[in-house]
Figure (cartoon, rainbow, N blue to C red):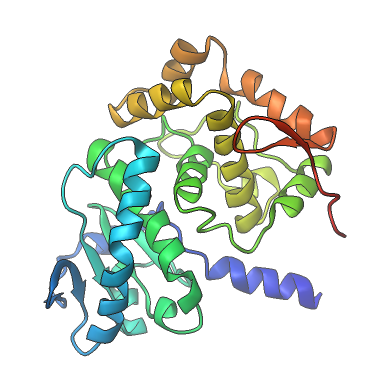
Amino acid sequence: MRRWGVIAVLAMLSGCALTVSDPRALRPIDSFVPLAGDARVWVEPGHEAYGARVAAALPAAIARVEAAHYLPFARPPRVYVCGSEACFRRYVMTPKLSAAVVPDNRLILSPNLDGREKHRLSALLAHELAHLHLGQRIGHYHSTLPVWFHEGWASLAADGGGAEYAPDAQAYAAIRAGRRVNPATRDAPDKRHRAGAFGLDIFEFYRQSMLLVGWLKAQDETRFRRLVLAVQDNADFEIAFWDIYGQAPAALLAGFYDGVRSETVFNDNGLPIQAAPAKP
């Protein structure tokens, strides 16, 4: 019970760039000032030291995201840094997050990343920047791009950011237990399939989604690059996938799941390696 209690708390602390907040999230941002030395970082007054940590991490995070997306940012990114819980709650209505990109593509960091989750700053910053990068091109959220790809691609760009609390072995164990993302499931404007839809906790969902996207890239990076460039050009994900791979996502990704069930996974070069046994 204690273990599941910890998981539940950690899940609530996860950053999530796809938060659909109520209309108050669209309120004007008027309580931040630009950080001296880096106008891309806007801080809650009095929390400049936190802002300086964000500014120091920003260049590497931007470079990582642009490399993962094969395109530069359409506009220089801006990061809003909340040093207090009151500030973060004012703009992000979904509780217990550590970072979010809310409607109008505004990236907001919570004080968690300057406190108990300080170690996650660089990774979550990259994860949220990945969502901001895509949002600049196609808007905050499109139902034609499934949530598992949104989150998996962002976590892959962030080298696991957002999925830190679920190792690969845990994701593989969930798959073997029948709890897995179903790429055949289509989102709709009023129905988004996230972790609970597949019987996964949030970190398992992020990790499994990242493994799916990483497997696609490892199999054929040329085709993967074509896919994500098409997505960034506002193509329907399913149509673009068929055009590029000649089959549905579920049909191709069955190869990943078959590999996991046979305890074979793939490294970054697409070569089969034996999976480590899942720990209980």
